[in-house]
Image 1: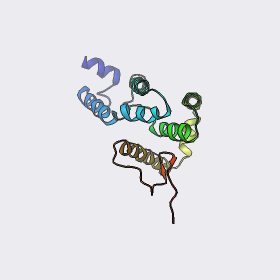
Image 2: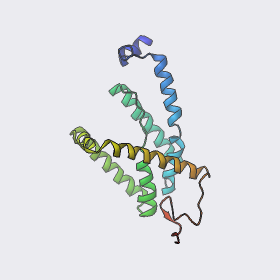
Image 3: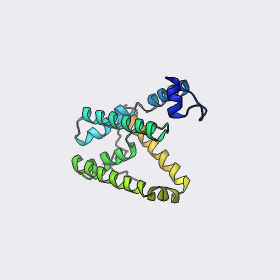
Image 4: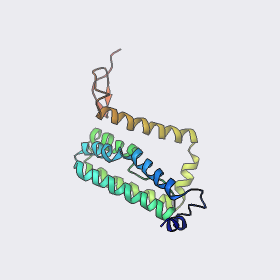
Length: 176
């Protein structure tokens, strides 16, 4: 079995082995397991069924990760984008009042456009013109947003009258 994995994934050629890859896979899963609960908790605020959102999160993450490993031989876990889901939930559906079914249709159309951009190599050209400092800043901002949502859901961060924006809802305006 080890030889089959080594032949298929070129493990020896890449300087790794089955044990290292299994440990790395388990570590990656444990690191990303939060999305199984955080993503459905976030998007179910739009009116979607929590259980259905959880199942869709699990299936899409598993399918994309398996595809990335088997087709591209690239050990990167894939999952729904938390930044896009936060925008979908708090800006599109809650703040702007767009029904989740319509917003989900827009996300599908966006996905089709993204695939077209990728197949035509235009996506790579667009990424290369964005300065690396901005790319790192965006990733950091998304990480802070995910942490913020988790801390709010965990009750560590709570609403206070002096807070004027909480998850897309205006609570009050600060007085000077």
